[in-house]
Length: 104
Image 1 (cartoon, rainbow, N blue to C red):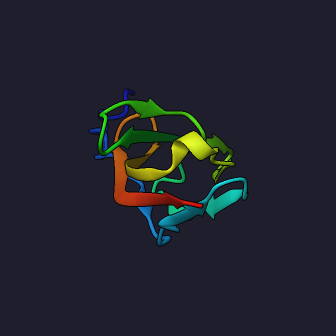
Image 2: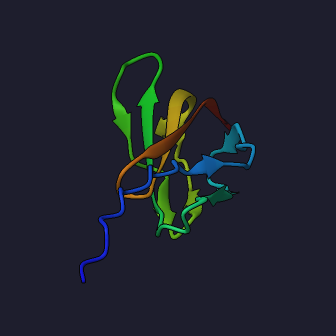
């Protein structure tokens, strides 16, 4: 006897629950723990995009290690950045956008 087919359930997108740290200082370690959850208990991946608000250039002084954003801005990183943190479960994603200001 064959069992009836079960329709797939919809995927729940991840949710970012933490509040970003919006100030960074030259030659000081920036550290932000991103707290995110997924109702489906899917494995999550993390990514950050930084774009200089004045020049439009992408910056690379911050990166993820697991769910920790970390890095040390340099003198030439002073300014404001459009920051986007993307947390994905492989199907859907949550995006947290904020302005990161790097000062001396």
